[in-house]
Length: 53
Image (cartoon, rainbow, N blue to C red; front, side, top):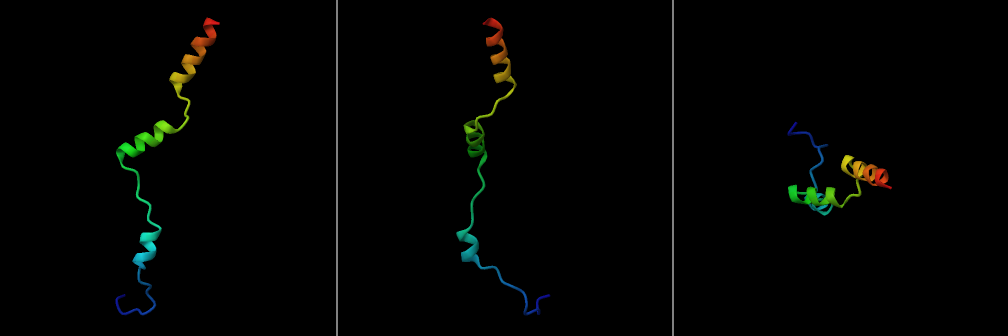
């Protein structure tokens, strides 16, 4: 509908001001590592530690 006068054009300045780039692959890895996540290895290590005591 190229002739429709009700269409709103994109305000590029507004879009750029709110733009937040996504993390690249290395950034994603760093973000994941920085989170304090308990995985199966952590659980097994804790169980082995408790079994020794």
